[in-house]
Length: 97
Image 1: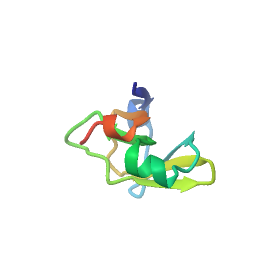
Image 2 (image 1 turned 45 degrees about the vertical axis):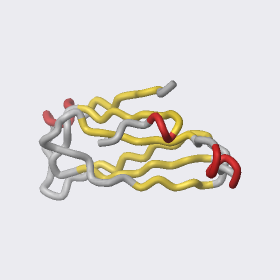
Image 3 (image 1 turned 135 degrees about the horizontal axis):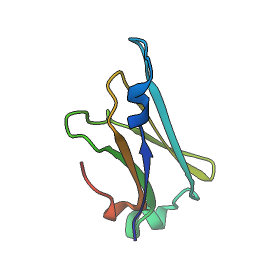
């Protein structure tokens, strides 16, 4: 099973934004660090986010295990999509974009 959630960014289009406007998106989920056995023979939970607009793709995000959490970070801007969809699930089930 893969869960998803969306960040609606389209209301930001109504704001006055400076030339250097950026959004730092950080998503974290509880995940114990995968052990050797799990990395070799199993699957571990993962996070990934994609843009709703193919013309404004997200730059490559960074995933990092921090203690008992998996953290995904990406910086958007100055152009931003209307929506960002994030997926949470087993690595082998994640969408590839």
